[in-house]
Length: 481
Length: 132
Image 1 (cartoon, rainbow over the protein chains, first blue to last red):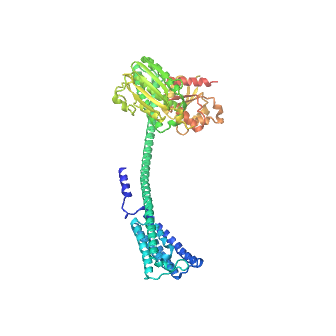
Image 2: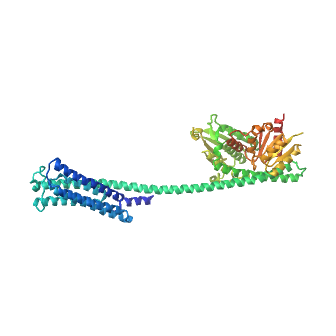
């Protein structure tokens, strides 16, 4: 993600001339300004009426109303300009809106200055309303423009006060409110201008700082939103990919299932006939014929075993094994397997031992499938152990049950270890035939139970044999109740 | 007399093989190629045992077992059923339970391919068990 960090830096530090998120909302702000202006016009009229008749402050009112009419006129003009904005091409909207913003504020400041002139000049305390203009400007314009507007306001007010003081333009005294000589007191004028300057520049400094902070945050949010949208896109396409792969896998599993099943039916029929002949149900057969029939039947048994292994894979992979799961005791599974293999072990002269703790917790699982795993491991152990002992051990651990099958057999060559649980893999030192699917099916079964299976060779602490281990999660972990 | 056995299977070769094995021991064998035909033959022939395959076209073995639960088949209730199929027993039982909500009520279950000796042994056990 190094590139997007670089992007974000670029985005956060880009020059003021580029579009910012606040400028995007500029148009919306301008329309708010227009509405506020109507309120301001009403306010001016109201204040005039109240001052004239409520407080008996005497000043000529017609110029005030004329200024109000003028304000109303340019406000209508700005409203029209604003609605025309949306018809412009996207890249022109912002520069135009910014220019409009300047006009709004300059017009407003001019209108306020003219109003002040007709309502007492420096006698009128409403001069401090210029603060509003500065706050408005800092919301939509860049910092330099805001300070410039501060200066413009000060120049306007200073010129007004100055020109009135020296008599270039007439002065209106607010009779009954301020002494008629005050407008020529330079000290007063200077003090008022200093206060106004401090107020305007101070406001500009604070509000632009706040707006700058907001701007940074807004950009971060916008950037995060953009990154998030990208990630969501990536996720969506990944999900789509997964869905497609799963669909294809399901189709393939279905194909294996149908193919294996269709192979099974004719083989079963052939096997039936072979056994019928071998059993002499169709008349006497010679020893030689019987021998050939037996060998054919053996090959068919091998094929049927391979097919049944192939059928197991889709059954386990498609998750149907979950339907078979219920609460069970591993005790029963392990002893059933040991009992089933005792004869085979005895004929080879191998000792078959069980070291199983009495208090094995119950687990959730498929009895037949786990039986298949233990049978496979015990059977393999017997197959690859010429003499010695096979030990089946089961212990409870913190979160799971550990089952181990250890032998003193020929072991597994180190180079074979990584591929031991792969489909159709047979160890390079294996003499007897098998489908090469036994361990890979065992792995699938154990993984479907949420467990793990692995092998070690030689057995830890010895120099020979191999040890196969698997874990199964305890009940509390897998059941929802 | 050894008894009359109805064998229901869609595979004619399996039917032949099973028939040969059974007839060698003196059983009389009648056959049917699907579940519907099997039920009709059951009515007509009143066999001593029914050997039933599970996966068949038209009406499968599961449907036959379900149909036999109906009270109108009560007079055939004492005819033992031996399932002979290539479907594994636990898978079949689970499927039947899921579909009907009751246990698969059959007397014996044998997975194909079946060795003649085992088949004969299971057949004779089943027949004797229900023989009044």
